Amino acid sequence: MNLAPNITAISIPLKFSTTSSSCFLPTTPKPLRTCTTPTPSRFQISNSVRVPARDRVIDLGKYKGKMLGSLPSNYLKWVSKNLRAGETEEWAKLADEVLRDPIYRDRMEWELAEKILNGNGVSPNLRMRGNAVSELVEISERFGWDNEDKEGWSKIDFGLLGTSKGGRIPRGGGERGGSVLVRLGM
Image 1 (cartoon, helix red, strand yellow):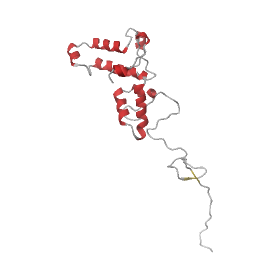
Image 2 (cartoon, helix red, strand yellow):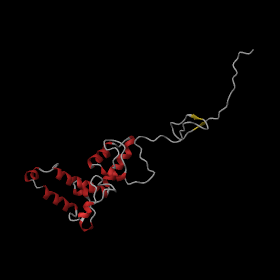
Image 3 (cartoon, one colour):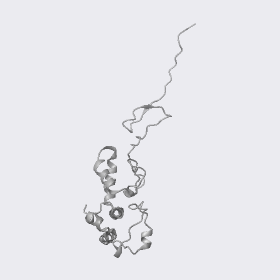
Image 4 (tube, one colour):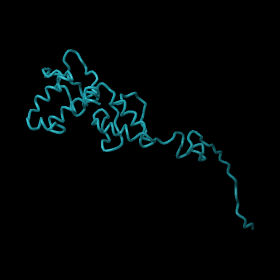
């Protein structure tokens, strides 16, 4: 009687995947887990379909799940300035693109009017006079808004203003809003 264990060698062909630097693990022909593509970064932006930067949905920060064009300009400026490294650099570049977008300029103009409507950032002289209406009229003239176009104003979704889905501020004389950055002093 032979008490030595009976050992048989089984040959399984192994292959190594080199498509990603983190995928040097041997795999069998039918692996349970494949490592053919690198796992996407948490902040990686999918470019499968070309969507305007203003319509991209942000997946980080306090506005996660919102379209870039619907975010306040001061937040986009912060993203552009502070997220310039590593995995978030793409978001900084997209924020720059949105800030230059002519459709987003409507949001930047509206933010200025909204400050007056809410009483934020209003000059002390205006507060004492209490004449926000004249200030709003001056702003609308400066930006070329058509205040008489009731139908145009009714089509605006102010929550989505600055995106492709928010509508545009009606302009008088066919103007679509020249250089708002110069008008806003930016």
